[in-house]
Image (cartoon, rainbow, N blue to C red; front, top):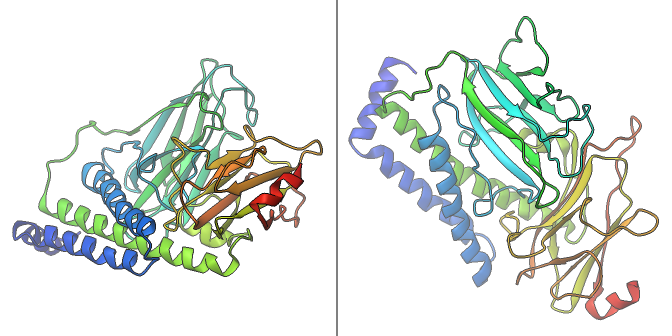
Length: 389
């Protein structure tokens, strides 16, 4: 920022305009909720959703927004959700800047494996760098990606990943390079915990050459941070509300989601996403069937209208390839229903009658030009589910 811009932002902060503007942004975001469904549950979840995004935004941009002192933090988790957050993922984010170099130090759970292999009880991990961040809008185009299929470690399971705009001259055993873009950026880590007792990787990030201490708080920093917070609350609410509206055009079906759009908003290029809307009457159920292609794993989840995953702490609202029952031919049948049909792979609606949903094939391995299969969906009467046996 220029000196004049710093002075302007400092004056805004001192006069209280930074805070007032942030509060106005929160108030404006309420209009997104008011433009959605007006039943009690959806409205209550909508306003709670705004409070959750605000909490995540303040944590991200006010507390941990300094790229000189990056922090791997859980922004999206059990009580802060957005964009069809995956219940199988433990998400970590860190703020980056192209002016600096970083190193992620980690340790894989033992036993050690060759790249691409996965032991029972181990989590897969993916690290992706994106341009920009959630508070600025205009998407987050991908820069680089590194995952379990490429990750090598030393004998003790430890590794380092160097993040910079330019690669190091040489890399040793268990060392890797992940490019970042010019200007502000984001590191998004996904650890895929397919079973509750899967062991996570140990991960931490630091700036190469930094002293580990944050700068003294300034007016420009706080003004900018609050602006980004308001931008995230408004931007996320508007974006995913618009997506929910778009998905209603193919309610109770699961067509392939546009991959380019997914990548632009933080999705991974090697995941095939199938986003849609679901709506069931009291006496109806949704039956989803598919034959999994060769892939790292798959999952399906149920969300509310605001694209928040339903409460997976207490309810079975998702299934994946590690925990779902398969049929003798390897195919899968999932059943979304309001009450337990007494059949395998029941997914609970948790008091909801409609919402969004998402199916994922993670790293499908198919011949060039071959698309992964589209899950088939049909609505049936709940009383007819017994005939599926």
